[in-house]
Length: 345
Figure 1: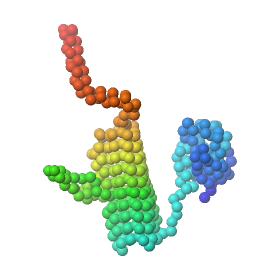
Figure 2: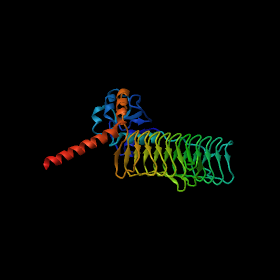
Figure 3: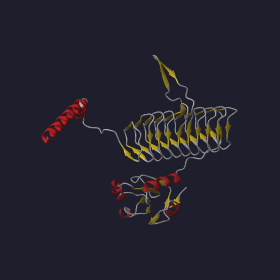
């Protein structure tokens, strides 16, 4: 539904410079935006594009506003405001409630009359599907699962028995929640499976990207806090706990019983060993390997940057001699200390 620039300013605590009656129908990139679309700039590298844009309005800070002669929505955080406007103008599609003829719903399941169960989905015994839930085609919801109000499952999501999903979650295709954790005990040359008896508990307002897997707990539960945002292809092992409003990028692996605090961010391809704790407000850069607990907020990194292969091979060869070099250096230091003592005497 189109809105005026003045209405957007009122809703999102901004100010208009230009024509407040400009009609905004959609959001778009700065390079492609048309006269009824709004764009934004939050990075100085893109300010040069302002002279070429045909956007109906641009979201800018006060500091950058003079760089554009057209309609401006002035805010403190253009990226955040753009996201809020995008959500307003492009909401999730509405749906008609019901159960598709090909869906299989156990008679003992409880499905709210305002929810939708898509084609070829399966809802097992004692599962509870609350008001306004949308379940796409080919999903599996196990027995005694609870899916709270307004949560959406896209196609081919699997929720194993006894797991719970909070309100207003978005679960993308291929996600598996509540599968067995990697729990085995060595029995001579063979492995004895440890039954995974816990659950996976997903809070409210959680988004889980495509093909991410979240294991159930071995004894205690795996817990994903309110407001957590998970990218595609993340693996979360058994008994992991992730605090509220933490965001994790793609291809991260988190080993069992790791605890990650609130408001943390984790860059892509980072890895966490098991049984460590990460404090609130910790930020892990991409590709880092976290092997110890982190007790203080801040930015942490452990990755090595890419180098020309010849240089890397030389450095790698030298790394193999670090122990020998350290021993030789230790001997030299001891000799120097001894000589210094002799000279003093």
